[in-house]
Length: 63
Image (cartoon, rainbow, N blue to C red):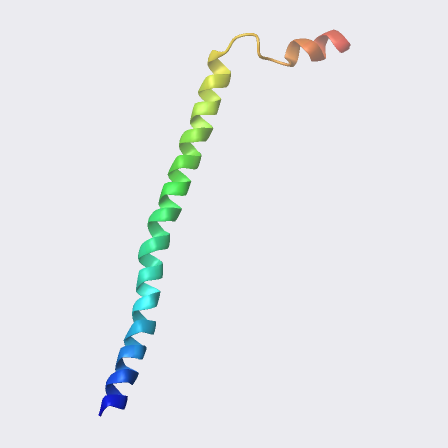
């Protein structure tokens, strides 16, 4: 009887392991994608606001 209890506990551990993996990785993926989008937006705004940081003038002078 103790052998059956041990097998049930081990099986439960393996089944719950998949649930814990899903609970941990899904929020991490969402946070990564959100942060990535915010950083890209911040860089775009920074490039638009900072004057005189364009390479277009250098390219025109070389031609």
